[in-house]
Image (cartoon, rainbow, N blue to C red; front, side, top):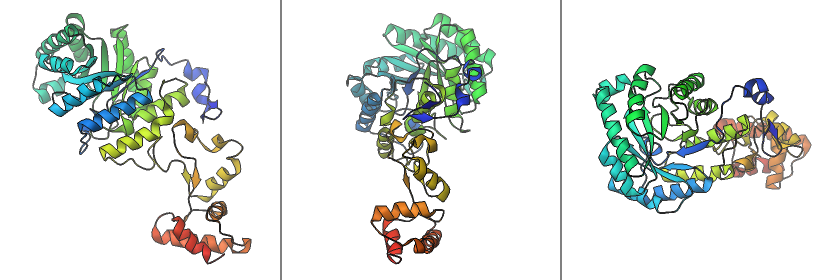
Length: 404
């Protein structure tokens, strides 16, 4: 793949310069673990019923997500029932449950039928001591006992040291070393609970962990408090991490998590990394989750926003009109079909020009003489300014009808 793929995307050639790509250590296969049903639901005011969780899991599997974190069975019996039903669907995705490092949680997860667990333990000294009020020895003992139980129950274990991004590395390794040696960890997660890793910091810490535990699979779970969730996730993958934890629409606690759609399209277009996901279903998936979570998606949200393929301003509108039939990517970073979006369109309002008018006149079947176009445009601008928005078709028809 390259920086300009016909019918797909057109990004900067600098992205594909060998001096840039030569620094990457992407794994042979990148996987996605979607945690919309757990971390996504932890977004304030978002509650999903059992049936809604099952429906979203189906959609995630259709998109090709390789792993689904279906929830925390200990939260409520309905959550456990949802996980159990999801496990019985025969989806292509592997199903995981989020658990505490407790024997009882491991048994409950096994009873739900999952293939693996995301086993959480506090990973930083300050949060373990002052938040959980545990000493590290207790955390180690609990983790060893619980992860061995999970292994004996036939579960894959992804160890999840929360706030590991802020932990002193010596403290983090002092927690991980004995659990690695005496417990059981199939994969380890670098957890940026508070979204505080820069992309450069993420890559550096991934490298440090990889050096400490060569051959051990590493996953990245980053939040978006500084707007770096997507960038840091990709940086972590470029440094060698194998699995990206994501949520649909970037749902999650506080500012949310790494947005599934943006991570995937970023990898495909800007890094040339195949994801195995059906990206053309992203817009449909986003709208489906938006409806069930009742969490509105901003109209300019990357990849899935309703207005990202619209123009109101005169100059870009004219540029689009002139080049769309030659190559639409002259005016777009990627083609709308890549994500299942609608074809680009022009709005009409305060910032519009004559090309916007021509498009709207054709759309409405109205005819206005060239000598009146200036006056019509001015009338549109005045109305749009007064309403503080672009105009509806009915409003445009009313205005244009006076000049026809």
